[in-house]
Image (tube, rainbow, N blue to C red; front, side):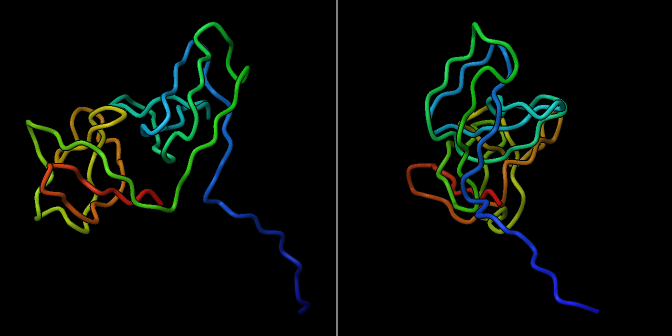
Length: 132
C-alpha cells in the first residue's frame, strides 16, 4: 500500500454552463437539468438544485453552454415560504421542496425536487435552507 496524492478543490463556488434560451437571476435557486446545464430551480422533472445563483446571466438568445454561471453551495439561504403548503417548525432539520426559484414548500409537488434542509424559520415567513 502507498499513500496517494488526491487532488481536491473547494466546492462552495461551482461554475456551470447555462442551458440555451435561459435567464438566470442572481439570488435565486439554481439547478442543473438532466443534461447538466444550469437553469432556474423549479418543480420540473430531472432538475437537481445546486446552489444560489451568484450573477445575472441572460442566455435567452444563446445555445447550451454559450454562457456559464457561478452557483454558491454549502451555505444556508433565505427563500420565500409557500402559501399553500408552508414549511413549519415541523420541517426544521427536514428536506423541503422547490416550488420555484425563490419559494420552498413542505410538499414535494409534482416532481419532488429537493431544495435542501430547512435550518430555520423567520417571523417574516422566510425559510432558511441549507443547500449542500
